[in-house]
Length: 157
Image (cartoon, rainbow, N blue to C red; front, side):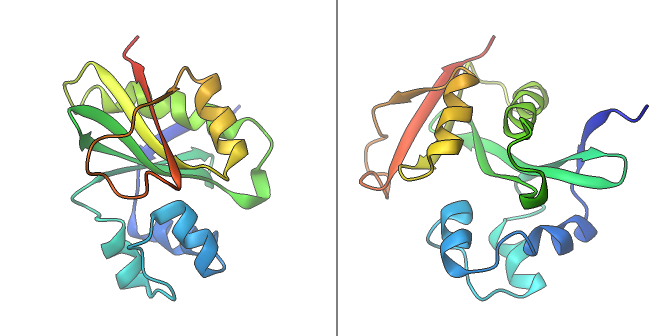
């Protein structure tokens, strides 16, 4: 039996990931307003800030189920650019990805809280993050998109 596992992203994983975002709206919702569209392989990887930002993929065998990143922001471990394979949505993979990233990120960044941003119109993602213990928190001072995104935090276990 093959178990799901979180592994370091490879350049080949980006090739598949690019196909998950077919239009400018999906790219902005996932990558933020500074993420270029249309993109090339090089601009996509550059806009993901890889390899400078930690990136992981959730895989089952050779199938890429989900993607996520983490880095330090506002003195918290910030989860970013979380995405589930469109062909595998509504299978609980968002929650699984978040749990794996929470466990993995604490080995790389020494902080006592996690954070993430989510667009206000992304109700499925918001439900997933709240189910994982995140709560809407006051937006960090000076951050962009406060009128379009929620800022969520949760303590380390």
